[in-house]
Image (cartoon, rainbow, N blue to C red; front, top):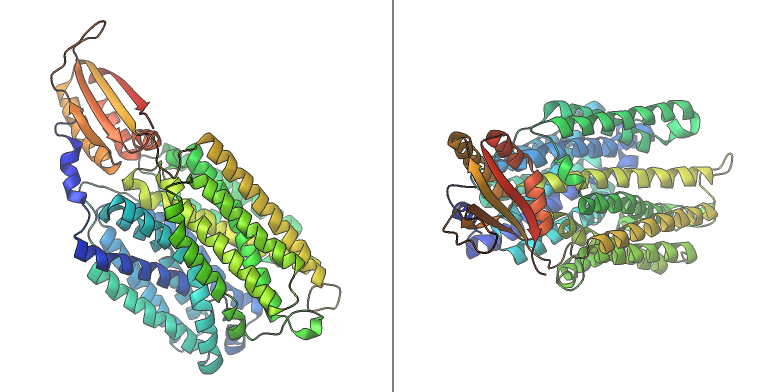
Length: 574
């Protein structure tokens, strides 16, 4: 199958030295935290932006929406670039774009330039998956899995860190001072990446599918527009429905482009693996519920007493409600990798979804004082932290190393869309519960929204349980997978040589280890002494995913009819 054992090339991807690893881990965590916090800066500043720039609240809302949109579009593109040999350059260039965007938000320029700066900042949201790819390539397996889980958690709880700090700066120094925080931390992140992020392993290639990226960008623009512009659904239902149909058609066209392309933006074949598809479905529905509760609690806390409920908190004090969310989310992120050694990943997803559902139940039943809001937010953080930490393990268990960034990028696009829909659904329910001539919804509208969120988390729990039943080993220790190739005849040695060169790279990228490579064979009984190759993978699913990867499909195209062989993928003993 290959001219040299695949393990020979693995030396190029060995973990970094222990001293370098000590610097690498905090660097990856810091970069992930910064891009998450900066991406969420628009949330607490919407009112301040509207006042400072003399624009409507709807226009100011775009300072958040445009960052989410650019992040959703950039994430799969950066994920594909991160799968290639220029990952370090991609990370540095992206952070440079984020720093430039941060500068635009600070300079005394018109509102359009602020939106351009926020769009550039949103591009950084695509770096989270690349941080995971670096950790998986350069850290020992167990350490890497724990760091990846924490990166996933940090990408969520970063909002809880950035929200109160930005709100505090906005109160005392204005909106420019708040955005100045983003400029300072993104510049620090760029310096950190330049000093700490290593080069990607050799032997990888990556090409960006430009047509796929354009179609996906158009589809995501429509999805986020429909999620963010609630007036479309309440005042122009026919237009909204038409745009929704167009978005669905564009997503279908994108899927066809990805399936037919030789260098897809996202490995759709790997994404449609039942374990990955189930995890992404759980992420989508769960994301709707998680963000719904987050927005309900923060909005409820800021509602003035005159509405008959609420606490009339300032933006900064309301941001402090997110502190238990961040703290308990981080705690859950630290605990989940330890639990994953005993409990399958899908079961952890299900358990975390139940915890988030408990947060909804608490909010629906008891919200008469701030202590109850803090408790509900802490429970939400515990559930979101556990869910976010468990998700990468479920997906990466069946994903080749070379596809780490791409697979997780797709998951984060799904998460972004789910979060946006959660925010929109919450707004629609509260709008429906607002009486004529009133500024604030009835208190019962919050209960209705909480019950809707409970339904979303129930679906997430059931999806995760089905995934656990069908793939009980996903996310935990599992039987290994093996490629067994028996060559009956070789008719074209040149095609075989071309295949060997490409297959070696694909096997290495997929985490395969070649144990048998055409050595001596003693055949007994009905056996035939033929050239045999044996390659081991960490799981059966990973062996299948590598076989379906774009890199190995390129090797098969080179092989064509050059050999006649018996190729099988078999599962080892658990």
